[in-house]
Image (cartoon, rainbow, N blue to C red; front, side):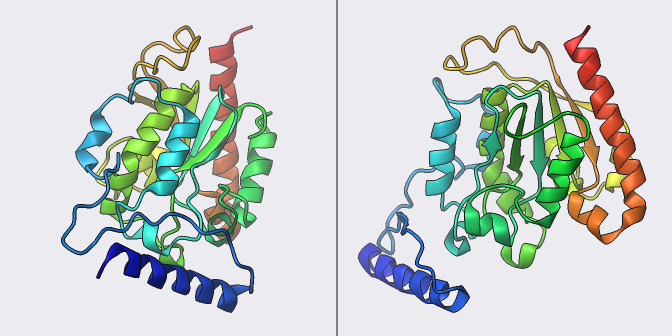
Length: 263
């Protein structure tokens, strides 16, 4: 099948899907198909091993977001409505990392805007944090897994370079992982460690040298970045017994921020 034939078929399926969902025709996007037998277009997340490299010189959040939106390195790129790069302050105190977009996030292209996202906003506001002012919110994978399942290992590896580039550009004071998927990926565990074993204490993420475009960030952080994990907001919606330990984690986060910022 030629690239043109694939594009025509994909656009037809997009239109049919939009009609069946809500009748709203969303803006089209470039698919990046190639003729059968041809080489796939270059993508920065095509090689999972690239997750351990420094960001490209002059890397920016806008450039990372553009790469995410054009990425087709795993199967999630073919079934998404919108990629969800993340949003928030460019020089955040806290980078919040979740597992992956849900239905509302896939529809809007924004992270944590469904019920779990509304709860997350309230949790952050309780300790003086807001995505518009001093937080950046992102996910391990940037496209919605079908039926909101956990991201597969290959999907997370394809997106890992994007997340590392975001961390290098943002240079947050603290990384706050919500849920075991995000925590295990960032801490490079085997993926099976329960969140109950990870929460309540700080780990360290090795800080990388910021790209040249991030002028002024060199003085903000030296060495590693503290990492704190807690329960995912969707887990709190399912089990109210988890709200108390989650609040303890939030207080721990607030205390660490006060320590870092100083008097």
